[in-house]
Length: 102
Image 1: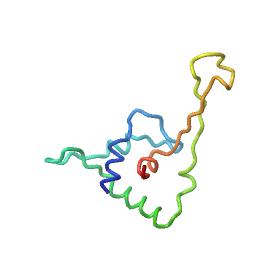
Image 2: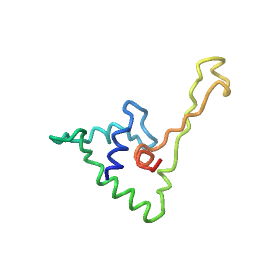
Image 3: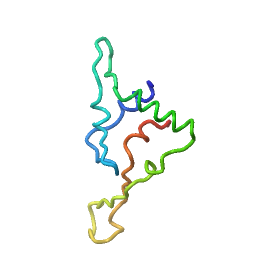
């Protein structure tokens, strides 16, 4: 569970929502300050750990969680109408990548 809490602590705020509309703040703000502890205790760490462990035990990753949206981002120079002047950014789910081993 501490690995999940560490991953939640590293999530960056103020990022775009994933394909399902989840934002990292929903996970990181669900925390409680515990007196005497250096960092907040993440309320969702235990249930997320149980879900992720179940996925690993079953060996089946939910197919909808492996989908991403590719959004073209203008590079800032050249003709905006040319595809070569854009780069693709993939928006993926917030929950699972933050908990996967690196």
